[in-house]
Image (cartoon, rainbow, N blue to C red):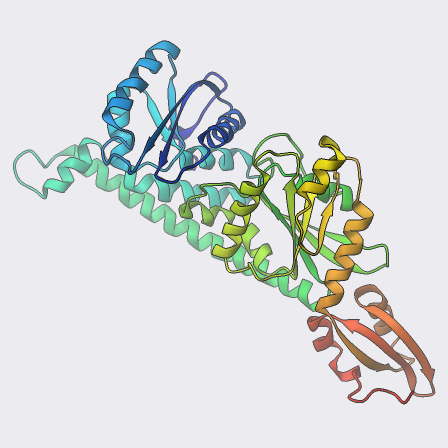
Length: 426
């Protein structure tokens, strides 16, 4: 179920409100991003208002004086929707709607609405529906909630309270049903993932800020046909494809939904399918929009999410994308002075060869060098080695082929019976 109260349409005129609560943020860039979110959802921004405060007002989030200023701007721009750049409490949202007389959304609700538009798979739609219901549940209130808090007595009984409690039970029951259905999808994904692991193919997952060019890169490398638009969250559901490196080595590569600043914890559930691909990846490919003025802040937002889900220590290739949009000097300045950093243009293919070489190098570092003895009758094993490993040397002997190769941990486990404990004599 999609919450219709959160929908925006082409006719929605939107007023944006941002507040820097003691963090010394760049509010221009933050509201510019919120503007793009509104555009992605189908609305049109007609005005912006910013306030800097040490702490949020418990009733209205912004101060009372700034609220009066917002009312004045509202009368000038005539919006039918006001969007705040931070998460509002249910009480703050209700108070603001009462004071302004129009619908008020926060950043979380706006992103959920975009997710609902972008989710294509049944599982993705269920995940977004679950996140929307969890968001709605504490916001079921108004007069009914006030009556419920009184705890009984004269004036507290009646259809208002009954309707509220029925709605709550219905949503809790629906949440439980969706959670159970999603568990089934999790089991299916776990089965598919175990099959991929058994294949011995390493997995590389694309991560990055939304609209950094991950899907463009995925399409260039694999012809995956992933939707590419100049909008935030153009793709939501993960896509996994086979990639063959120039050396002939095969691997699985996964595209993921873009991350974003101020991503509320309550929305992490909507990323579940994507985040699992990140968690189980062997290597992460962090795609950064090198042409963005705030690329460093975007990069840090991605690393923050990676730390939260416990994958910050995975091997990472940093990919500075969209170098076709900036000059050569700017490219050099943006190439962070860290190992495994490559500048590319996913749109035109610049730097792709260097990227694949870097990927080959990183994967090789994960491997262990072993000697194997493959009987001649097991030619399929040799084919597997050439496809999934790096074969460095072959010696043909009466009992079979002695092979020196670099194997992934998974492949080493699969081929343990063929691995020699001692190296052959020189």
